Image 1 (tube, rainbow, N blue to C red):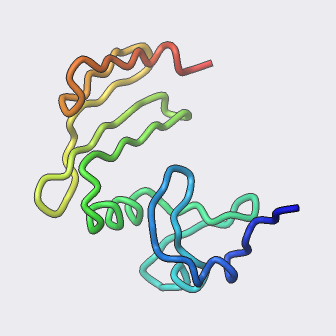
Image 2 (cartoon, helix red, strand yellow; image 1 turned 45 degrees about the horizontal axis):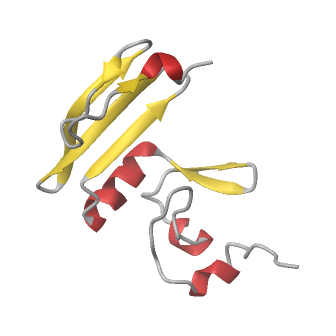
Length: 111
């Protein structure tokens, strides 16, 4: 039987970014400049903090899908910060320039 590591057990693991994880420990997040919220036993890092981390790691494209506002914001890294590359709301079709030929019909996302 395999169990998931607790935040403190995860501390020894290398820092990395993967979909759905941050690779950061409770100690990493216990900094005054980091905004955080505890939800369902997991840290949810607020948008601006993740944005800074991803930029520092050189992640070229960062997308924010907001189900409550029903919008998608595609950001592209230019220099040290992200800038809007494509955006859409409600039933728009989003066509991120970084991915030629990709069309995201937002009407298919919202239930």
